[in-house]
Length: 280
Figure 1 (cartoon, rainbow, N blue to C red):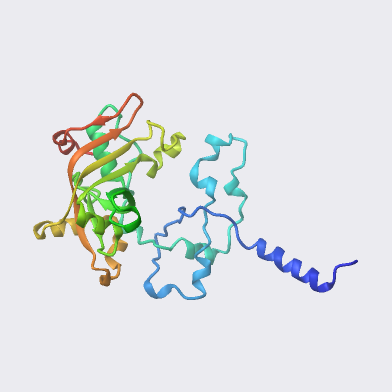
Figure 2 (figure 1 turned 180 degrees about the horizontal axis):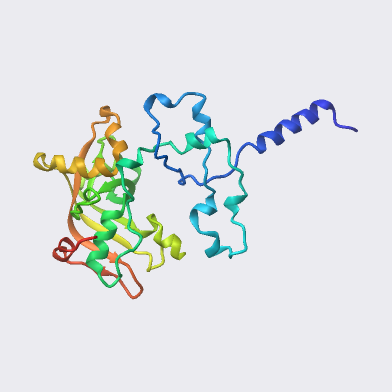
């Protein structure tokens, strides 16, 4: 039996739809230096185009010359770019003007033998970290709970070693801290480009990781202006977040600095050494 024209039309529509979407990396948004998505810019026409990304998943993760060989073609290069308009819109999602923020990491990490300097380097040049608390949620009460936070230890030219946060009482982590203010903040050098360039797995001990443990406290009024400068200079989009969420500033008062930055074990860095060091 020959297929009817209705079946053929339906099949053609399905094939067209299948060609419309391509799997992309969920974290490879390109930041535009010219434009910002303002609150009123997300029209019904714009929103679907924001799903388009100009970087392929594998091309984002590793250079083709390092992993695939000089003669191999990166899978990311096989994806044809969408229209210029759509690519421009995708590059603006959750972005802000680059002239307000300089490059947030040096191309030359600190030598691993200088543990205190390495710890300060990671703490300063990391834009976000993983904060672990003791949960107050009903189903996991008393168990560890981790959450991602944007952080800053000061403007790019002024590192303090003290990590500042901009938080809301609506966050589960803030509820946890009201019950038990102690927490651990973990950073990984995998956040930057170094481990990708060296093709180090995030768990490779040569891809440094830092855990700062201490007490989370609300920033005092006399320190508030500096906390605001520290956070908003690194994350300017935060200044536009809804005031109805009652955002406020917190900081981590350190008890312990734990570092793994090479093979052969970990380092517990004395607080005095940590604060005397500099990331620059």
